[in-house]
Amino acid sequence: MAIYDYKAITKAGKTTKGVIDADSPAVARRKLREQDLFPTDMSEVAGAKKATASAAVDRPALDEQKGYRFILGGVPTRDLALMTRQFGVLLKAGMPLVDSLTALLEMTPRPRLKKAIYDVRDKVKSGSTLADALARHPRIFSQLYSNMVRAGEAGGALEQVLQRLAEIEEHQAKLKSQIKSALAYPAFMAVVAVGIVTFLMLVIVPRITMIFEKQEQELPAITKVMVSTSSFIGHFWWLIFGVVVSFLVLWRIWVGTERGRLKWDRVRLRLPVYGSLLVKLISARFARTLGTMLESGLTMMNSLDVVKSVIGNKSIEGCMDDVKAGVRRGKDLAQPLRETGFFPPMLVHMIELGQRSGQIEDMLLRVADTYDEDVRLATESMVGLLEPIIIIFMGVVVGFLVLAILLPILSMSQNIA
Figure 1 (tube, rainbow, N blue to C red):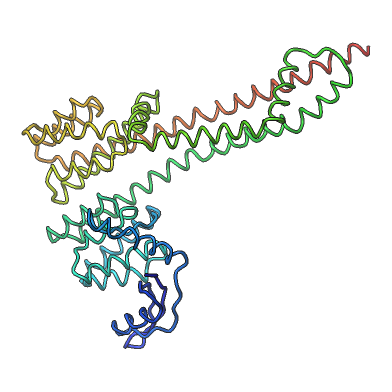
Figure 2 (cartoon, rainbow, N blue to C red; figure 1 turned 90 degrees about the vertical axis):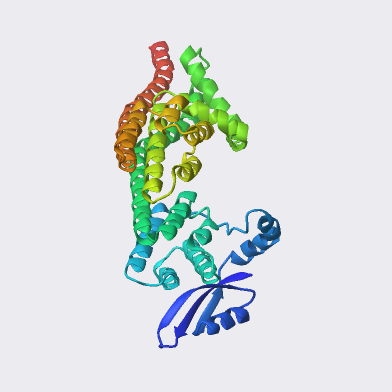
């Protein structure tokens, strides 16, 4: 089955466009005419045929287990947030669910997101719930997203839930943008520094070395180190490149295993500065997700299941089973969280206060805002330290090269005198 982009005319004479899946263009046109649409232009989406054919091969095995899921690439967080907000506005205005999804197809510019929305609309037309249809696209709609929509459908507050989801996505996009902007300048400086040093060692130093070799005089130790380093890089650059690439590939393979990922996540938590920053980031994600899920009407146990899937650290995820077991036995949430030893005291105390006052959702969202701000400020501080470190590194390397070049030149001038 392939996916086709189409343009068509409605019964009212208006032009519309969208995507449709079918075995052939003729079948696609027939399906459109059944919807009272008269196609004027149709083209197969590039790469869709191969992807759907591959999916069809795997479909029986997946259907036997958890049901077939469309696997599409992710989309930018800002685009997902905009789509979610538009969806909520359409539903709040009184537009039926299927009509709202149809309208989203026309308003969404991203091809991947448009294909996902088309499939969601198709499944909703077939009688599926919106949450189940969204869950078929885990790379676009997270478990948090589909579970909140499920809660909204059950509680009759889908519009409000979509607005909350849009706010969450927008907040995440803003935080990511701030962190990327803060890291952009030091990353650029690091690339320039490596480029300059590589240029000096591969182009400038060999030419100067030829002059020294013609003089046939004893070179200072620092100059010999420079010449040997330049010669090694010039002759064995392919070996250095191969070692670096091999290391990265092997590291990715190791981290991709369950055991490797667990060990790496434990190491990350113990790293100085970065470890504490990561704990704050995970705490913010934990608090915001749990607070939003509880605010949307999910039970504590169901919310903890979703929270575990979005933490992003295997070491802490393993402790979440103990937290769930403690809550199931009747303990307050704060007590098993404290026993894990991972979560900061501020988060635990705020949860305790929220449980006593009956405002745990509000307390969780407040502490999430606090930790997000801490992460932003800590990132800016780290960037402020990186810039002088890179400058000092550049100064040391350039100073070493200048000294290694000037010493033999001064020695040569003295011999001439």
